Length: 230
View 1 (cartoon, rainbow, N blue to C red):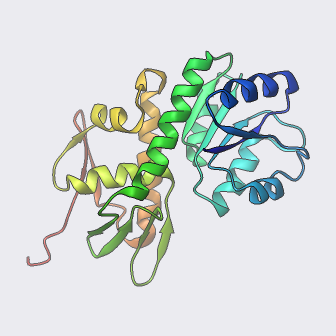
View 2: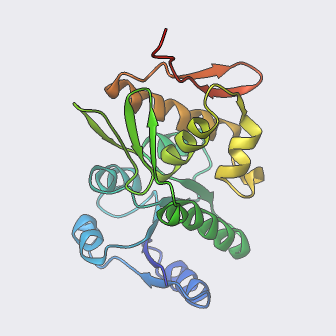
View 3: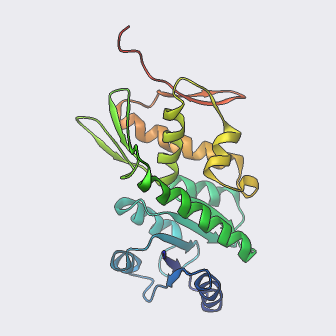
């Protein structure tokens, strides 16, 4: 049974979401004090966070940023705001998905299931360690490290890196990546993948691998494995 922290100040919507998701055997917790969201997050240790953008005290972006400093737990935004920059901002801060209100509950459940499946399926992977260009990728802990640095990755970032490294030196199309990251990518902007890849590249720069993922215009992306014998 997965525990979901629902950070939503609209009490009627909170209760409706709680009732619907409880019927799917999820445990739903809310926030009592919107000025101390991090304390409640750390106490509850949820498997997934659903969070609105417009909240009392501080907005959802603020709390997403703080959560990402401490955890790679999946984060899904729920918002009535429809400006494209809201989605871009959420992805840049490390969110895994963005659902615009009003939404159909079947869509909400499907997206939650997809995010949880992506986030926690790697823990049972028989080969959770990858070696790539002198770095080690730990799929179970969502980390990439060298002798000098250790970098934490989000669930989407580790998924993208895993797919590309498993097919290193081969182009992986954008469509394939979107299909594998988001089960029903009709609800996902094409720019969302670009934002996730760019964020991954920025983190890889910290271990000297920022240029090891190349964009092939009109085709997709490729993870380059250097030939150390040359």
